[in-house]
Length: 167
Image (cartoon, rainbow, N blue to C red; front, side, top):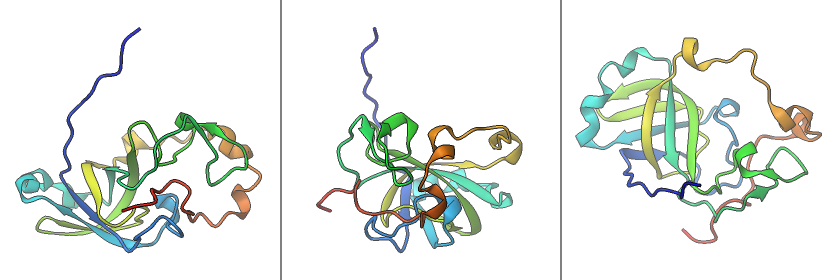
């Protein structure tokens, strides 16, 4: 059996949002109308060429305030615990987040976005264009989430269960 490998990774920018802690933060970008922006570091400016033609972008980022992972946790939208790889909790072995946001405009190295669901000052790892032809899966299923008893009545806002006690 293979052993885990270690990788070096660096941020390419910072995501700025109105959310200072996870409490009351939207739990998915599709459930958020909140505005924010991405400040891409200057050395990556050339990588933004031609991005302005896309309506949406995929942001990959580091959950910088997540608690240590557990292999089973209770997600926001259910009363039962599930394996960490069956939920989208930020407390993961590699705390990497992903959100699809609306690209409102680009000014230099600043990307104005709508639909933020991450905390302020979140380290940005990568940006990918959202391409409906490649990224939509009309026949996809949602596993346990489709049967969750609290999903219909949930506010889609976070509490602080996955956030560190310190900054």
